[in-house]
Length: 188
Image 1 (spheres, rainbow, N blue to C red):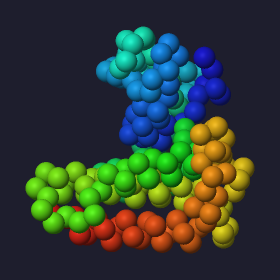
Image 2 (cartoon, helix red, strand yellow):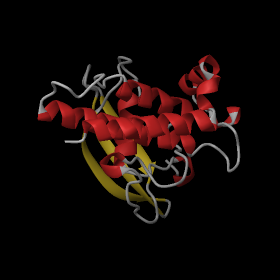
Image 3 (tube, rainbow, N blue to C red):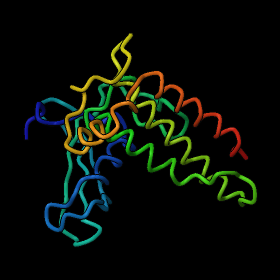
Image 4 (cartoon, rainbow, N blue to C red):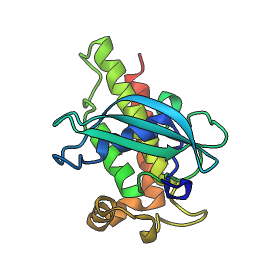
């Protein structure tokens, strides 16, 4: 393995999210029980190796990522996924799909929820907002939308083709503002 083949994982949360979405080569199920990780040097580049087993079939799995030269703070509360650079692991379609999945779990109203349920909804809203912020990182300065060339995965391209209008810059910013407003309703 050469350093130039390694993609950048801007944070451990981004690395774990990426690994959880990758199908097992053995059984095809997504997910990895990455119970071990270690830093190493690959061709004079700092990297992080994660290894463990498939949660379904138990097959050994391993991922290696470049890590940032300078550690950075999370960009959005406790659920930030990386610095100001666009992701090299997940394309904008995948990030929007992640945001949708997180936000679909939110109850219509915080009324009647326990404190634990409110905290969980708040955390999902925070992570969903962070995923929307990740999509916005793919918008070039001054552009009206994410470029069609920003999608490199089959999953992301398919999502983009099915809902191209959802990658409009103004729509993304409005969605993010709505999620942040909803967070205030679920704050304990």
